[in-house]
Amino acid sequence: MSEPEPWFTLGWSDAGVELLDQRLLPDREEVLVCRSVEEVACAIEDLVVRGAPAIGCTAALGMALAARQAIGLDAAAFGAALDAAHARLAATRPTAINLFWALDRMARTRAALQSEGHDVAATAEALREEALVIVVEDGEICRQLGRAGVELVPDGSRILTHCNAGALATSAYGTALGVVRAAVDAGRRVSVLADETRPFLQGARLTAWEMQRDGIPVSVITDNMAAHLMQQGEVDLIVVGADRVAANGDVANKIGTYGLAVLAHAHDIPFYVAAPISTIDPATATGAEIPIEERGREEVANFGNRPIVPDNVPVRHPAFDVTPARYVTALVTERGVLRDPDGAGIARLLRDTRS
Ligand code: MRU
Image 1 (cartoon, helix red, strand yellow):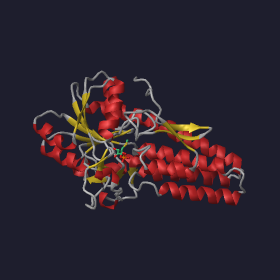
Image 2 (tube, rainbow, N blue to C red; image 1 turned 180 degrees about the vertical axis):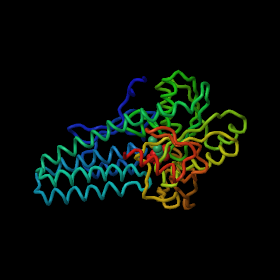
Image 3 (cartoon, helix red, strand yellow; image 1 turned 60 degrees about the vertical axis):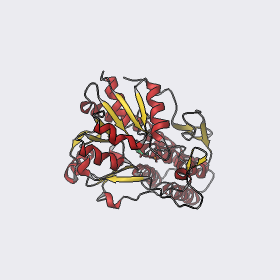
Image 4 (cartoon, rainbow, N blue to C red; image 1 turned 90 degrees about the vertical axis):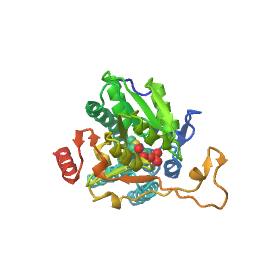
């Protein structure tokens, strides 16, 4: 088993919600302490913390923080404060379903505690415990998911990945990079090609940093090199994470993922999506209904601190795209590998998970 990551991604302390500030990597490792729900929400919006499961964990901790800060209030005011915190956190990033999944879980916990007649202080403490359970479970689920994916990774695989679906995007271990880590743990010799992932450079800055830390061979490529390397036979498989999987198996993930999936199809390269069950959204019928976050100008119009687009020239910045299910060779979850995911397979997976 690989050791827990030698760094801290997110957590709780007496001071508040603590987040490794991913904007500063790989230059500096600094922990940002969020002391209010507004600070937690801004940290999610500003990509201090990012990646669907990590966003969900952070939102759960944000709700725990809101509850702790509302302990002096009467029951009605406490409920109103938590409703406001829920609404603020839900408004941060629209695509990652784990955000809403975690907020709903915290809301259900709160409703159950209230119906059992717990007072405000006991409810706040129970919400803190629930948030910590979500954080711990997330890491365990990633390890299960990773182990399930090992069968897809032959010895010697050259693995292309996009964005960062690693320990920095979850509470620990990662989804796509969890599969890579588990393959290494199982003795497979692998190497990783990390797409740089314009504009926020999650691949160049974060995936490369994580892989280097683990001693897993990694090379960074710019996004426009992927097609060439596939054509040259230098990619054996692709594994990416997901922000939301629709009921029919369509997958929303970081912008650029769809292009990779089409290229993989053209070159007969397996295209795998690794995501926990909590990333599947049965309420969203198809990818066409997944809300795609549009981010602001700054990340596209600048490279580092340097402007690269003339003033007054508009930019576009959809942060995610949707890969149709037909391009997904298999979906890897903590429940195993679902090949050729489609509506029936996803429904079966969710049914089996509930039973
Ligand atoms: O904008 P980001 O960095 O939050 O986008 C992250 C991704 O697209 C990840 O691939 C996805 O959330 C899965 S993380 C395990």
